[in-house]
Amino acid sequence: MFRQLIAAGWSSADIARLGRSHALALRLFAGRHRGNGKPFICHLAGTASIAATFEMAPDAVLAALLHAAYQQGRWPRGEDRRAAVIAAAGPAVEALVDAYTRLPWPARLEEAPPVVLLLRLANELEDHLDGAMAFAQKPPVVAGSEEAKSFIAMAVALGKPALGAALETAFADMPEVPDVLRSQHDLSYDATRPAGPLARLRAAIVLSGLSRPAPR
Image (spheres, helix red, strand yellow):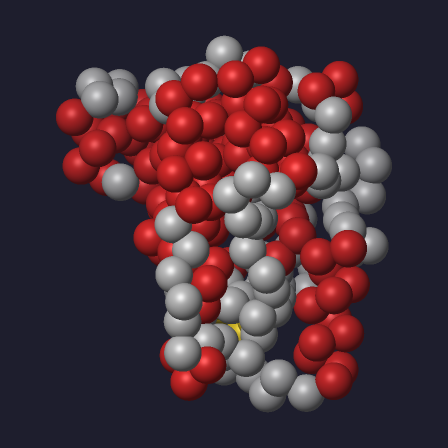
């Protein structure tokens, strides 16, 4: 991701924001994994790389890197979350992360700004690349399903047909995975903490949006 964005000609100021945003993500997601077992920081960097690949602006790419900060980051008690994101990436990025956090999903085109919907589609693509979702307990989006069709159509409607094609390919590339290689988790989880009932409840609450930041 770093090499990609340097090669893309990002300004020194944007590269500095990238470094600070990555450092914040490392702190917030230490020990945390996606439901498929992938370290969460790899998912975040991959989502940012996808955003850059499909020619999203630096603010959107940085928002992709921090898109789960409010929903799933491990914040110290009492830390001002918005101030931390603004300090790392700037107010425009914080506004995108906040909008992403509040986005219902699946969503309709009129329910959010196009860039926020594109970030959500980039997240879907990263989750499904290389058949990764086949390694989770949660069922993947499969080719030909209504969900897959709606995501692909949304990408096309938002002016990113290449993103739609990439989603279609990813959804069709779900391998058969032996049970022994599949994660026991259907939600993101903290590998440094026991996965007991209380931990699963907390994860479900976070993902449901009940612990989102307070309204502005």
